[in-house]
Image (cartoon, rainbow, N blue to C red; front, side, top):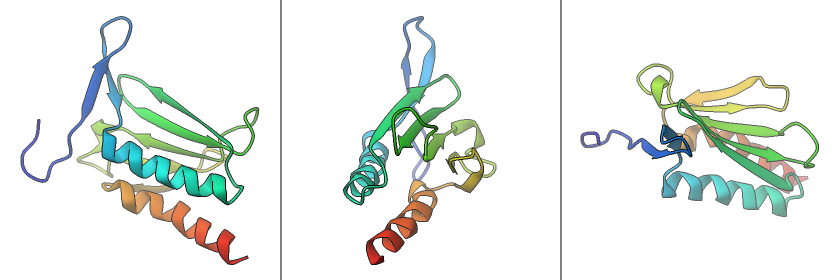
Length: 118
């Protein structure tokens, strides 16, 4: 889809045949790896994913009935601007934006290190 070094945007049709944004295998693996470590640390217990025509979301929950503790958004339209990745906190505040998923997840990685050190 893009030239060398440009990210691939994965789209797949929904029930109405409209394209949707999704996570590619490497992105999902990176997100689920962090999720697994946060579960092992007792911070997260559940997750949900949603896919729309403009963005894909991964939300992690401490308890199922609550608001997500963290939400990772992939919005390809922002790729050339502030970056297509955004990490939102529990209150909906933007914790980090960026062009690379690893950089955005680094905020949660640091939190995980603090939890392990305690």
